[in-house]
Structures are given as structure tokens and as C-alpha cells.
Length: 147
Image (cartoon, rainbow, N blue to C red; front, side, top):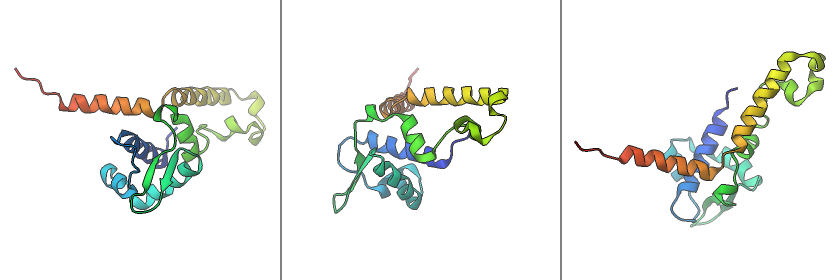
């Protein structure tokens, strides 16, 4: 299963917002520049995240977007579902009636297990977990060893 740039860029943008030192709204153009995401595309990704209550939008001179809830309450599975829809590798996992062989198909069982595994991983990780992982990677990058 390959996730689209919607998920990759969407999670990257959320990580950027969650990593900011203050709770002030973040300008989309700043996120786009820092993360090298096309600004128009970023606008398209932010809209469903606002509608779903993941992000909050503020208009005006001091406007931008901010997290609508704490980063430890934002689960990656929810974000992926908002941006991608179903992550099932084949249609019959979500809709058994889409195939007349669903009840007897052993490969459907495998695809169901793959779907459950992916969902389980994504349900176990929050945006805060990503923030922590990112900080750890940044610390490793800046650590200097002298001999």
C-alpha cells in the first residue's frame, strides 16, 4: 500500500505546526517554505483538517493555522483517514459485496490482515510522538564528537 503525497505532506505540515515554540497561529506560506510543499497544495490539505477539527484557522493580520487539540490527542490514523479515505489495500476489505468471491477468498483474508496491521500502527502513534522523534533526530544531527 502506497500512501499519496496528501498524507505525506499533510503529516509534515501538522508536524511543523506542532513543533513551533509558541501556540500562535502559523502562516501557511511559512510552512510551505520550510517544508518545501507547494502553497496551493498545502491549502487543499488544510481545508479537510480544519473541517475535521484537527486544525483551527484564524483570519487576519495575525492569522494562520494552529492545532485545534493537543498533539498527544491527534492520532495518525485519523489524519490519514481524513486525507486519504480508506487505507485498505483492496476494495473488498471495506466492501465485501464488491466481489462475489469475498466469502471464499483467502487473499481477501491476507489483505484484511494487512489493513489491520497498518491501522494498528497508525492508531498507536500520535502527532506528539512524531514531534518527539523529530527532536531526537535533530539532536543526533547536531551532536559533535571530538577525538
